[in-house]
Image (tube, each protein chain N blue to C red):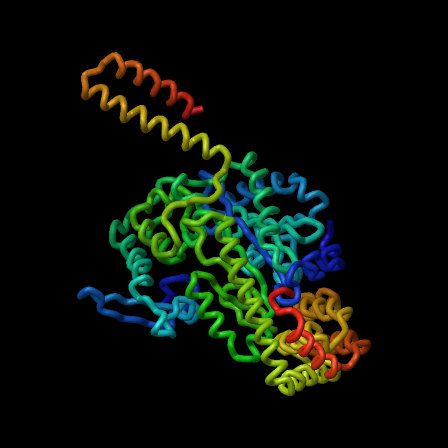
Length: 374
Length: 163
C-alpha cells in the first residue's frame, strides 16, 4: 500500500460510527513490548537499532492483520508525511522525530498501527471510532499473542512487561479516548472534571497527547498507571469514568439549552458566520469553531447528514494534511489562507443554523429520554 | 533544570517542605505540577509525590557507579533521561526502582497478561523452590534417602529449565 492510499481514505475511525460517537471521537489502546537482551531504542547505538528493526519488522509484516499493509522505514518518509500520520494519530510525535532504525507498519483500514523502535522496541496501537476500548484492546491483544510466539519479549514474573520508561512497566498498556466536550467547556465546568479525573489516577491531555494544548474542545483521557491492575480492570475503570463524563457533558448541554440558549445560539451563529466568510484562519481557530458547529449538529441546529463533512474538516484543515493535499510546502500565512478557502468551499452547501430546531430538541430531550440513554 | 517527574520539560515550580525533620526539595514542570495537583493545595499530597522522587535520588546516592552489565547503562544516565537502558536494568537497579514504582503505580506486582511461555517458566521455578526447600529440610533431618531422591529431581528440573 502506498502513502497516497492513506491520504485518499479517511480511515475507519474518522467516519465516526462507534457507540457514543457524538462525544467520544475515538478510542485507542497501545501495548509496549521489548526484546530481551537488546538495549532499548533510546540507549541502543545505530547498528543495534537496525538489527532490532530487522528482527521485528518482518514478523510484524507477516501478521494476518497486516495483509496489504503500509510499511515504511521512517527515513523514507518526508517530514510532511510523518506529520500527516501524527495528525491522524497513527504515529506519535516522538516517533515522527525518528529516522534510521525505526519503522511504522499499519493496516489498510488504519485501525492498527505498529511502531518499531519508538521509545520501546514495539508500540502496537489499535484505534476505533467512538467508545470501543474493549474492541481496541481485543485487536492489539491478539496481535501481541501472535508476536510473542515469534519474538522473545522481555518480562519479569513480578514486574510484568519491561519497558524503557518505568511508568509503562507491567501491562505496558495505555488506553485512551478522545472526547469532544464543548458543553463542559462553555459552562466552565471542565476544570472541575479534569481535576476530579486526575485525582482518581487518570490523565487528561490535549489533542496530541502529553504536553499539548486542548484545542477544539477535544480532550484525551487515559490510564496513568500500568502496574498492579489487570488490563480489563484498567479498561473497565476508564470506560466507567468516560461514561460518567459523557453524562456530565449531556447534562451541561441541557442546562445550556434551557438557561443560556441565547449564548449557545450566538456561539453557533458566530462560528457559522466566521467559517463561511473568513479568508484567513489558523488551525487553532478552525478547530475551535468547527467544534461549535459539531455541537450544533449534535443539538439539531444542522441536519445530521452534515456531520461527516464537519468531522472530515477537523483532520483536513490540520497543517500537514493541508500541505499534502495541495502538494506544496506552504508558509503559515499561505496555510491560513488555504484553510479558510477549503472551509468556505465545503460550507457553501451548508444550510444556515436553524434555531427553531434547537429549541424543539431541547424540549424533546427534557420530556422524553434522559440524556444518558442516548 | 529538568522536571523531577517527567525529566522532559524545564522545571518551573520549586517546592520545599520539611517532612519529619528532613528538608525535601522537588522541581516540577508546569504540566507535572498540574497533574500532581500542586496548584490545588487541598488535593496535593506532598508525601505521595516525594516518595517517588526521594526514591529517584536514592538510586543515585546508593551506588553512583553502579552499571548494568548487559548494556552499560548507569544511574547517572537514568537521572538524565528517566528511561532505562535495557530490560536487565530492572534487575541491576532493582533496589531504587522498587520505591519509585511503588510511588508511580497502583500496585507493586504485575497481575495482568504474561507471554504463554512465562507461565511454564514460573511453574518450573516454583517447583524448583519447593524441591530445594524440601532438600534442605531432609538434610537437616538426616533423612538421606529422601535427600538423594530430591537431589535427582532437582538435577532433572535443572535440565528442563536449561532447555
